[in-house]
Length: 565
Image (cartoon, rainbow, N blue to C red):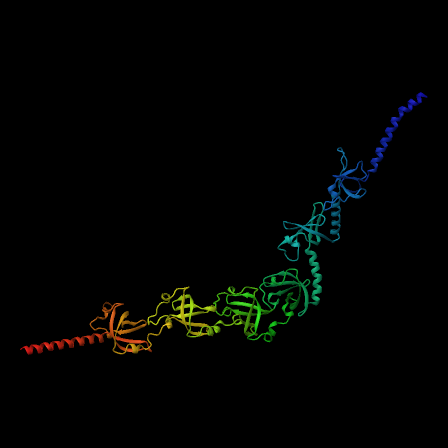
């Protein structure tokens, strides 16, 4: 009995070893079908802080970083018991680590899906994520390349504006081993354009109204996509009004209904119009406006010669610089008005054929020159400030912004004109007399000499013929000397009326300027302002009187001598 127990005890370890060996063999057999670099399905068994444990039916559970289970917002999406596809990178070997990846499994599935789409000539959708050399990088689940030439039907100058946009693409090239995918958006647009083109050509004819989309803007117009067919809407056909650049009315992508003006099927050229969809406003201008009509409009353009004002859309009138102010001399319209400003004006003239309307701002206000007739009656004496001094006169500013001119001939009664700068200085106040107001010519004539009496008036009563006068030499000429006998009155001593004993080339020596001389009046004409003087008459008169006295004295002496004898 003891012997059999002993034998039994010795055989048990041997039997246990054989069962353990069979178990390992059986376990290894369960792993058949799991190999490296393939995708298999596992089950989430544990969720930790840093790792998620996945059971793939291998010798031990595998760990995957929790980051691979987070969505774009960083939220963990794994739950215990979830089935998940993973990619087997390496099976357990000497180091005892089995490496798997959920992310790589997802990417491989994406590549498989894209490959299938490529084989079936299908379409993928992706978002443009980056600008790279030669084009754009697109996210279609994996990164793909979109060449710049395949972005649109026309070259796109600014590719950066497409960042973040999503589009459909056609796959031109697919190479999974090299990780290379080339896309095209243009290929799809061409297909779409051709389909639209067929439909558009069915309705395209002159006079047709077609809805289109602005696809390009130039200085001379906009190109409108009518549906596979492009048409040009020229800047002159956009509006009846004024426009400087098409961008004032349109932006790329705008929808616009246009009228087909011309269509040439052979050259595939389409001319479009927009303003033609409404009536030409100039057709009713004669009915709406007439000379003398007062209007209010907006300044839409400034030039050197005036400002254009919009009376209504498509109808403009010109306010010439000369029609902007009654009293101011406008050098440039910008000194008076600004773009966009609303102003009042009066219609002066209309030329419908030439599409021209002449306007006046100043006539919309009272004419200060007409008011001046009442405010400054002719003959009245007023005080003004010297605004400017020229060689021909003095400009004097009065109230209401009106300037009057004191002509050089109205400064002094003197026959020799005095320089205006000798009479007044700019900025000082002077007293003047109103001589005349010309409302039409907008001129106001003033005088300074008229403030005093004309010295030539009744001069013949003061200086009758043969009267002796005393004066001052004020000027010497080749034909005589001028002598001032009164302020503002000069007489001429002709060279023939000067003492004959004085040589002609010595007159200046005998009668220098400012010399006082005595002369006799031999001619006087107050109307013509001429006074003739003679020095010889004085000399002769004096000589005759002295000779007579000498003769008389000599006679008396002879008589006395005779009497003495």
